[in-house]
Length: 199
Image (cartoon, rainbow, N blue to C red; front, side, top):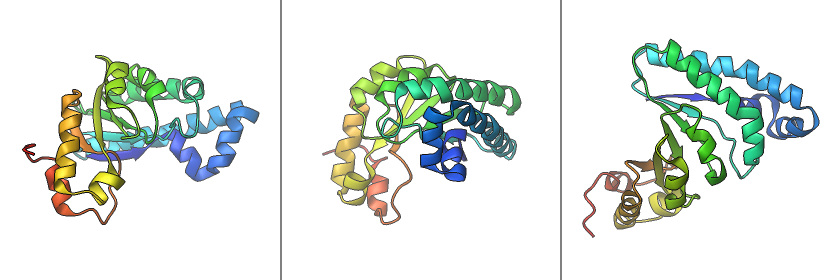
């Protein structure tokens, strides 16, 4: 599985999170320029990984509800995501699935994510699973959302199995950690994600 950092997150890291977010309000043209410039970096890296044999590409772009509104996402990043996906599907060899990942609360923008062309949205346990399924509809698959800190890091294998069962019951087909896992997570907790849920 390949992974790239999307243009919104690159803007955070290379220009400064506060600087970039302030520009979406004070100097929106500047914020648009950053996204347009950095999107080419993300696309080039995704294509290179697909050409090198990646079976899937995760596109991490953190326009989360914890930091920006759905309206800001729609104005600034949604059109960029749509263009990037169209370009990727034209340039990448084969039919490589594209997975959008955004941490945090994203319920108010999942309907927009579903219209970008990404195949899967990998989401955080901060979101209500049932509401996420409704928001995604038939346009995008959902993946996730086993809680990292409470369940994987501090829970037991039975806690993991219990949460996996709940996620499956809500209709999620692709189940895994909600984001990058803490280094101290026990292997038996990770293995429990794929175990049959016999509690």
